[in-house]
Structures are given as C-alpha cells and as structure tokens.
Length: 205
Image 1: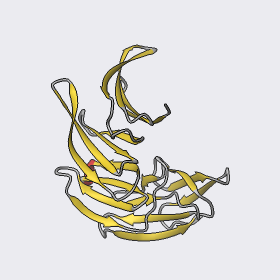
Image 2: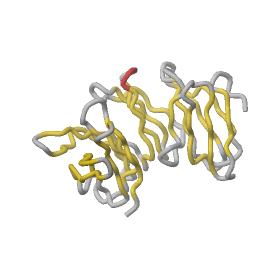
Image 3: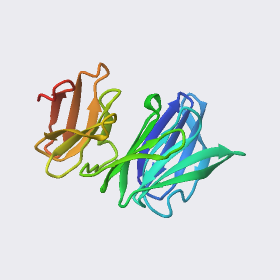
C-alpha cells in the first residue's frame, strides 16, 4: 500500500504512515540501511493514515480519514494510543508547533487548534478546507496557511485571533504549500503545473 508521509526525527530515526492504516518507525543500522523498529498495525481502524509527526520526544501524532487525530506514547517498547481527538470528517493534515503549545489539525470540515500539553480544544475554525497532506503550513509565530479547495481558495489563520485573517484566491487547486527558510515568501504548487510565489508580509503575488 502507498506510504502517505515520512516524518524524520533525527539522522537515525524516522516514521512512516500508510494507506494500509499502519504506522511504522525505522532505525538506522548502517549508512545505507534502516531496519523496521516499532509497528502500529491498525493505527486508525482500517482507514488511510494521512500524516504522522514526531513530537520533541518519541511520542507520535497521526491523523486519518477516520475523522481522528491520535496521540501515541512509547510504553514498555510499544506505542499506545493515549488520546483521540475528533473531527466531523476526514482529516488530511496536522502541524505541531511546540513553541506556542499548539497542535493544528485540518481537513474537510475545517481546522481545529489544540493545546499540546493536555490536548484540550482551543478553537474550531470553519470554512478552512484542507485537502492533501502538504497543504497546511506555518508562516510565522502566529499565522497558519491552509489550502486545497478546488476553486483555489487559500486561507490564512491567526492563532492569536483564532480566526481567518486573509482569504487568497490562488486561481487553481493547491496540492502543496512551502515556506522559504527566511519566512519572506511562500510557494503554492498544484493543478496548473505551475508554482505561485507570494510575499509572507502582504500576500502579494
């Protein structure tokens, strides 16, 4: 089955998630070989796992088309699910922002912000359709950018305001959003086989 995402912890460890509902972690044995380490065989009840992310430690966070985000903690050599966060529809993407104690989950029904320390819900923002595992990203300490609508509509959310700050008409469906290292620009790639570049400061094309 297709591997949906790879999350790199460090040079010796990474995690993968798949359409077969599994999550796996891998460990480096030698320069050109990684060995399967831990396996969560049915992480999301026979549903495609769209993304998996490491926290600062060995804990994992995953999201799925089964409408849930799950928190996994390593106990006695095995990963255990300690928390399940729910949406009303398929979840395509998650983003972990430890510096502001926030977990962002986004999908068909909108976007939710959760506290990372206890996973309590901060807010729910509607009309922020996230389609695709790479259509959620972070512009700076406050702003989150979300895309994926077929009409090319992109939303920028202010975490502090807990609301949509900017609506951008990109012109085509977004499949991927990348932010440059200097945080000056963000790039959107998608359906038209072109890349649009925008300014992070004023959203100019």
